[in-house]
Every structure is written in structure tokens, then in C-alpha cells.
Length: 592
Image (cartoon, rainbow, N blue to C red; front, side):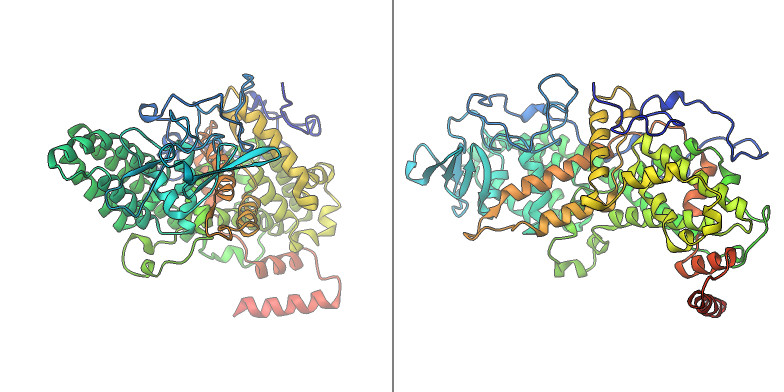
């Protein structure tokens, strides 16, 4: 049994990862005579619900998956995270997005790992089997494995490593007796946008799927398309459920509508499935729109600059965080709600869209005028807001004793976030407390016991590429994989570092090889990183919502950087001429 946290026992005053549901509620040292907490409800007024997140990972669709994988010839892929010892690892049958699968995506009942390579230049879409054209097959021994080429696709130990773009597109197209492996579908749909627009990919896939059924006989064509239609519907279902934001492009929706009409002419069952799929897609895009409107409205409220922020006020003249919530554990729970809510609306493709080539068509009117990484950017902005809110709460009070209490409170909140597995809020709080307007308050810090804070800083120490944090993250992930409750499943990564890792993976490895092929090993690794995120974002937050606390966290105004510095100087006066000049300049600038 793995430990609940790699640093169990570090914090004696708080419970470890588990048993948060039975967390005792002792008298808080920050508690004052406050009114009873109001009834709990959704801060977003039901704009969206974490309990009914329409963007959770789609469940495996077994109807069209082949069960004839040849385990005797399949070698484990080094990206696989599944466990065969019953230790709680995500198995392929439980979550196909847990990692790219070890076998060749086209390794089904055929004895050839590549099964077949089909020429895409032929208008008839005829197949060229590797059995019938052995000259197209090249194999080389490389010490620890075998590299083989089938047409324009290259495999190493039965795992796809490179191919031409045309071959990869053809590889995605289902036929009567073939459906691509789901790990391949996810990997290619995720990263293909590095090379072509999703609309172009969808158009070509649908065209190939229809054209390769043509034989010249209208009746035979109808029969053949009726047989392949369920698999085409399955492919489009996986696309719409895993990457629904692609369909905010009106061209994608138009293509989907055209395929619905085409399917209706051949198979009524598949037509009904297409109709249901489209309805689910529209519902999800509607939920996304409501979420974005709710976030925009909250940001507008938070951006208002009331007079209370411009001048120091005595205690009792303004609300502060301790008047809203004086229990660190409950505050950490509410922060976790916000984190998971916002994580759930980040599309997996947004990680890749940040690197994708710009499309001049996007400047035209249509759904794609929206930024393709807007939800990812909103989540990064939330991290920044939380950091500035922490600094604001510390710098605002007039009395040194009150500032020290708030610092101690946020240290305990950060500690509870660590125990929950909420590393993003943890890092945001540490960042806020390390901002120069806060760190310079030496008289205030002298009243604070910083032992726990130093331990937390050690966990998030950026040295050695955040090695301490990565160890803690692995511990939380291991706990999540063996969890028996939703609380134990919570893993919220330090998001900026996750983006940085994906960015350097993309920048540090060529997307194309010297022969012009797509480097599919890189795409496997990108998919591995993003699929891990998908597992984390599907967790439903088990804690009760407190509307008053949530509303305060997302709407209370915060200081700008200049306002923070000025508030800090007014809390503890300048110590040298440079700080005196800075205060004088800030006063003049902020009064204008």
C-alpha cells in the first residue's frame, strides 16, 4: 500500500490526504464572533455543475473495438501506465486515455502489425495489403528491437513511430472490417492540428470514408456504406465527445450536418445515432457558453475598483477573508471547488493549440473568432488572481497583529491544499506570500511561526526542475489510482508547470523527420501528458459548496502591483531612500 503522501507526518496538525470527510472541526484560532454561515449553493447560479460535467472523458465504446489483439506479438509500449497486478492502475478497459497503447493502432486480426496500407491517391480508395505487396515491407534489426516499414508507415517493435501525413489520415479512416484503435484516434485528433486544421482533417476523413465504398454499382455502394456507417458514427462520436470545442467552428458543424444527411440515405439506425450525438454536442457547447459568460461576469465584478481599496481602513470597516471564513480546511475545500470547476472546461486540444500554426481563415466571421485557448488562459488568470488576493489580504489591514493572523491563516490553508492534492492553489498562495510587498513586511513576519511555511516552500522549491513537487505529485497520483473515494482521487497539478512541460516537449523534439514523415513518437508523448490531465479533470469535487466563500474568492477586488507596493509601504514604512522615492512616486501615480 503506497503512503497517502510522500511527506506523511510532516504536518502534525492536519490529517494526511485521506479522511478529509471526517476532518474534525476544532475551534479555529482565527475565529471571531461571526454570524452562522449561509446555506450552501452554487456560486455560478447553476450555470454549470461539476457533478454533471458534460466534458468528462467519454466511456469506452466496445461495440466497434476489435477483441482479436494478438498478445503474443504485442510488446509493451514504454508509455503505458496501466497495471496488471490489481494494484489499482488504470486499465485499458477502464480508461483508454490513460496512456497511448503499446500495440500498433492498426494491429487487429491481421498477422501483419500494419495490417494494410492504403494508397490515398486512388480515387477508388482501393486497399493494398502488405501480404500482396511484400516489396513494400522493409524490416531492420536494431539490437533491442525490430523496425519495420509498411508503405509510408514505420513501426518499431509493433509501435507506430513515424508516417507521412497522408498515411496517418488514411489510418484514421474506418472500413467495413477495420476501426482504428482509440489510443490512436485520441493521439492523432489531438496533435494533427499541428499540421492541418481540424476542419480540413474532418473533411478529408469523411470524404475518404465515403469514396472508398464506391464500386460503380449504386445498390452495392449503398450496402457497403450501410456496413461502414456505424463505424463512421463511432469515430465522429469520439471526436465530438473528446474535442467538442473543435465544433465551435461553423464549418465543422456544417460538415457534421452534411454527413448526417449522407448517413440518413443509407442507414436509419446510424442516422438516429448521429442525431443523438449532435444533440449532446450542442448541449455541451451551450454549457461552455454559459460557463464563459459566468466567468466573464465574475471578472467584471472583480475588476471594479471600490474606494475601500484605495485607502487603509480600520478593522470592521471592510470585509476580509477571516470575516468570511476562518477555517483553513473549509477554505481549502472551496478553493478546490473552483480549481476543479475551471479545470473541467479546459479542452485537451487547448494545450496543443498554443503551438499550432495560425490559420488566416480564423480572422473571418464565425465561431472560431473565439480564442482557441480561452479556457486555459482563464485558468492561468485564476492562479494570478488568487496570488494577488492573498497579497491584498495581507497588505490591507492596518494593525500588524491582524496582518500576522492572516499570514498564519493562509499558511494553514496552503497546508490543507497540499493534503487534499490541490497543488495549484498551494503554489498560488505561496507565490502571493513571496511577492515583494508581502515579503518586505519584516515586523509582521516576526510575529509569525514560519516552520510550516518553510516546509511548504520546500515542497514547491523550483530547484532541480521542481523535483520535490514532482515527487509529491507522483505520490498524489498513486493515491488517486488506488482511491476508493472521490476525495482521494483529487489531483490538481501546478498548472503553469504542466503547460511548461508540454511546451518544452513540443519545442525540444522535431514534429517532422528529415524524410518528411510525422514524428509519431512525439505525438504519443504529447498524448500521454494530456491524457493524464484528462484523468485528473474528471474528478467530481466531493466537498459541500459554500456560496458566500466562493463568491468572495472569485469577486472580491484585489490590488494591482502598484497598489500592493503602496499598501505595503503604508503598513510598514520605507526603510531606505529608494523605497521612499518609490512610495512618493506611487502616491502621485495612483492619485491621478
